[in-house]
Structures are given as structure tokens and as C-alpha cells.
Image 1 (cartoon, rainbow, N blue to C red):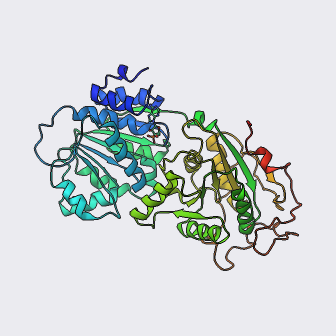
Image 2: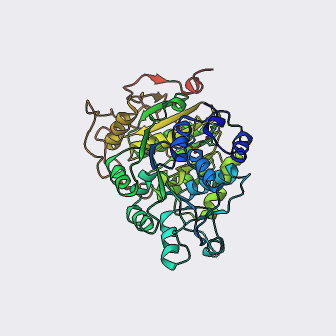
Image 3: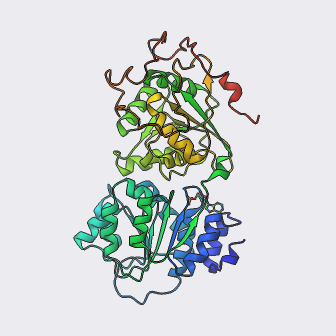
Length: 447
Ligand code: AMP
């Protein structure tokens, strides 16, 4: 199928061609005709599948016809869970809409009200917002949604995870009932379907398989680790390798991201942190530096990295496994972009076993365990056959200070585990249960 066959108007087609897109992606091919027919839609699609264009292109098509409704509120509203994702959706709207020049802008938490109020002072076509800030504006009376024609809930599952359910309902209650509603989600879990039932009217359902095609370019590895120190040693070893061009390291909490970035930097491995406690200017600056290649190591949390669209990430390292299996897919999708290959490395300790089993069920395969010479674990992963083990124990989120959590989770850890003081040199680890690999030789498996 071609973009021409999707009946897009010439100005939208020109913008798509200028982006260098030759054919629609599967989500675009399936969604665009449904959306252009005016029907509601619920679709599973992950970041990186081209889902943004799947709703922005038909939204732009709507804007080619003048609104007859008086007022200044948006005709198209996109709700997104994070400021980064919202920013990317806005960029896409501007790029694809360059021929139509829609009036558009973002309403994001952490950003000054002044610019947002200026945006809302004149009729606006497209608004991309995070739920909290939009609700704020609705309650202040600075925006109305009675002119709304299309509502898009992007990454709806994530918005639910982040506790935006009530905000979304309050927002939807202020929109016209004849609006068109589109919902994009990574999974069709029950809570998403319940939300869809409340907000969508007889939607067409499109379910694309988990993005296995692009993940085929990503080599996934699992390293069993004994404890926090072992993770840190292994991390420093891996990121010291010059074949690692650019990496995103995922940590469980914002505080861990800060502390891990600081520790790496203090150890001569400059790293930056990216998380939701940073103000938007600092986050944008960090992402821009990552895009330019000025940052080689980024330690991030899931929320901040969701939707992060940076090419040239050679490695994703899961210092901590994500609690939600979909996040694993999102995380590793930061590498292997634009047809490049990538390596996704996950550290797992016994306390994270149930997370691992959840991920493996979700992706439908076992992650292959590998050891790095000199860094083999002393403990063995106590897998429950068939998966579904109990939830991880009480691993404290902030483990970088004092002595929290040391030696708690794995009874087999520390047996003869001799570490260097700084944790920099190689420890003389012997307890490997897995074939030991010489790391460098595995770096580029196709070479
Ligand atoms: P998204 O899933 O919307 O975050 O898009 C992921 C990436 O795919 C973005 O960098 C887009 O520019 C790119 N993209 C979107 N549609 C196409 C297409 N039809 N062909 C090639 N690349 C695309």
C-alpha cells in the first residue's frame, strides 16, 4: 500500500514524502482508513511503530475542512502520559502539518502558564497535553473543549498506570459526545478495556503483534547478578567498552538514576540522568545533548524515557528490571532503531525473578543467560518452572546510599565474592553456572 492510496490530501502527502517515508507502516495502513471514516478506534501499537502519524495524519485531514463551530478551544486534542511523548507528538504534528500550518501547541505540566495562556487566547487547532495540566486549565476556565472533534488517548495504558484515570474522565466529561475518540495502548489489559468502554463508541479494534520485527535486530542478553555491588561492577565493565557507542541505562527510581549517573561520572565514565523530577528545560536539554551525541551514557527511569526517540543508541542496559512487562519492550526499543542493530542487556537478581518471568511470558521467550568473564554470578537464578513466581520481595528502591539492601535478597550471594575496593577492577568470580563468554567477541555477533 502507498500513502496515495490512503486518500490523504496533497499537502499532507507532500509532508510525508518530505520525511522520506515511502510506505505506511502496518499501524498506519490499518488505522488511517478507520480514522478517516470517522469511526472510533482502539489500537495496540508501541512507540516506534509509526503510531503517531497513524493519528496525526487523519487529524490533519480533518483540519482541511473549516470548523463551523464558534469558540477558541482545540478541534483535536491528544492526551499523552509524559511531557517527552507529548513533545514528540507536537513535533510530528508540526512536521506532517507543515503544508497546512495548523495552529497548535502543548499544555504540559512543569512549563510556564504564560505561554500556554497566550496559546489559548486565540482559536487553536491541535493541542497536545498531559492530563494534569489540561485539567488545571479547564478548571481555571482558560480552555473549553466544546469545539472538540477528535480526542486521542496516546499510551492510554501508561496514563492509567500513572494514575490519570480520574483526570481523563473529568476531561472527557467536558468534551462533546459526538467527538471521535482514538485510543492507542501497548496492551489490551482489562483496565484499558474498561476505560475504552467508558470513552469510546463502538470502536474498531486493531491489535498488532508486539513489535517483533524491529526487535529482531536487537540482541537480548540476561546477566544474573548477586547483589547491587555486582550490578555496579558489571555495569562499569560493560560501559567501559569502547564498542558501546551510546547507552541508556534504566534504573528503578529517580533517586537511583541520579545516584547511578553521579557514581559513574565520579568513576571517570561521564553519565547524565533523565527522570521526571527534573524540570522540563533540563530534560529537553539532556535529550538534545543525547541526540547530538554529547552524552554517551544516560541513566533514565521508564517514565522519562517513554517515547524517547533518539537514534544511534547501541545498548540498552536494564540495571533494574521493569515492573511492567510492556516497559521491557519499550526500553529495548530505544536501541535497534531506524534499521540499526542493538544490544539489550538485562541484569537480574533473584529478588527480581518474578519480573523476569512476567517479561518472558510477555515476549514469548526466555532471555538467554550469559556471563562476562571475571563477572560470573555466585548465585543461581531460582526460576520457578512455568513462571509466575511470587512478587519480588521488599527490594528498597533507593539502594545507593548507606548499607540498605546489601546482602538481603540472595542467600547464596557473597560466598567467596572478592571485590576490589572501588569496584572497578575485576573480581575473581568463579561461581558461574552459565557458559562464560568473552564479552568483546560477542559485541558484534554479525561481524
Ligand atoms: P512513532 O511510533 O510514532 O514514535 O514513530 C517512530 C519513528 O518512525 C519516528 O521516528 C517516525 O519519524 C518514523 N516513521 C513514522 N512513519 C513512518 C513511515 N511510514 N516510514 C518510515 N518511518 C516512519
